Length: 229
Image (cartoon, rainbow, N blue to C red; front, top):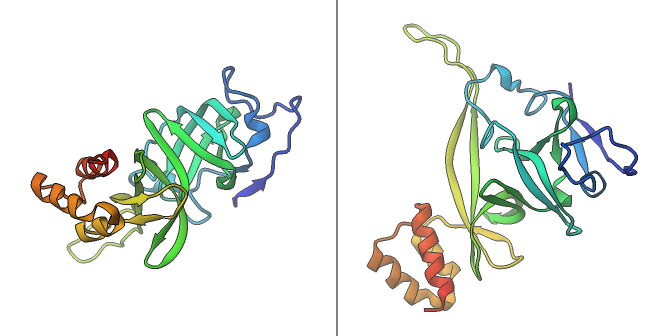
């Protein structure tokens, strides 16, 4: 069943979608929704027959959504589908919906905060959900990645391999304000992204033997940069 796109322009009296007694009903007026017609990540992949999970966390967790008109709604059951790049929520009768990205300002799920932001990669602009790892003049972002591997038929002396989702290493990006996020591939590129403290940052990285492919090390580097030392 293909996805059915639904634009919900709802009066308060229309309550056919309910997220729980504590969920703000304004959610139905301020967020566009697209209903997933089935449990597939897309029209060709039935995740029920695939090893692994496309989700950051398969379970729905009550979170907070702030729309682009600055309306914040609490207690929304959310989960992030890394493979499809969609932020999903659970409605009445366990129906699954995903948020229309253009209406979302930020999302909080547990201790994690996400934004939908433009980014630059290989000289091409695109958009994605990012987890915010560190706020500041320079903000550190994490982009999750998921790989889908098709099933492989049996070969002589080799069993068949089922289709599966595999978590790939995340990518790290730096963003200044509303500007596009830029991926950090190396220490050199990181330093070039922070030109006003280039020498100091290089010295700090070397002194503390920090690596730019390590999340905790990147946080330390951005903390140093934003501290003004």
